[in-house]
Length: 335
Image 1 (cartoon, helix red, strand yellow):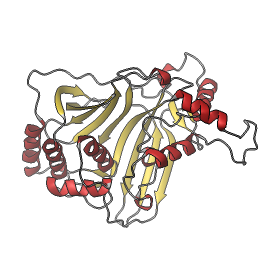
Image 2 (spheres, rainbow, N blue to C red; image 1 turned 60 degrees about the vertical axis):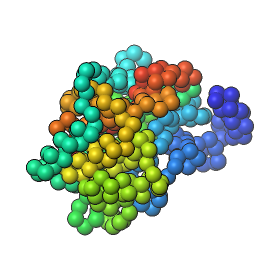
Image 3 (cartoon, helix red, strand yellow; image 1 turned 180 degrees about the horizontal axis):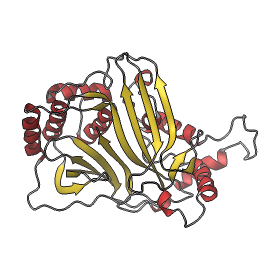
Image 4 (tube, helix red, strand yellow; image 1 turned 90 degrees about the vertical axis):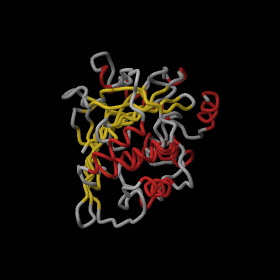
């Protein structure tokens, strides 16, 4: 891949000292949007997409700087981080450690627990989300860097919603982290730095994932297929759809039970044992392996609520400084 990138760079006719408003190489944010257009299978029409930094990065998890933008990222990191005094700002989180269990809980049994818990009541469905995420950015010119963020979306009865995004890492409270400037370039910021705080006008979309999700597994499958623009969902696609769903809704007890039942019925998730997530919560881990990547779903063992989703590399990519076991992305959802 490096050979192709070198060819592309040499083919770039724009000199490095070109005027700032002339046509030239894309910045990081533009590169990410271009990569999304070229390589991502859309999950929703652009007019229905929930605005915000996280939705803009969907499908671009592997890199927002794989091409010439790696030079920009490397320069920014040298200038802004520049030394051993802030290693926590660039270090990727370690993979979660699963405590092996000789008799791990099968997902269908956990679905039964979730259905029993939902029958006894429990939290209600709420539109909006509260998610903490760690996303790895790679380039072929600099070590990988991780952007930790917290995103809170709240909806009001009149169809408006607010989105607050801050740079923070709960593993290191009060310590500087990597954030982004208004052009999408990485820079060191204080913990809790506000990346964006936006209020959006009323939206009454009735298409998934903005319409109310059902609390029946079969209907939920159809809902997620429509949201993902597909006629069927394999395990990998269902995990993507779960990510999308939880980025728009905080599920209630019945919806969580339907989701875990759908995951159990689809198959492909192997019970791995107990795990403590990055927010200190106890969960059951279920693993799905594909070529070079492992995804781990973390579920509340009592209610079936999805707590988190971790994606790690199982194969090294030395050209990008990635080793087996590096965390590509992690999301932790809370109420």
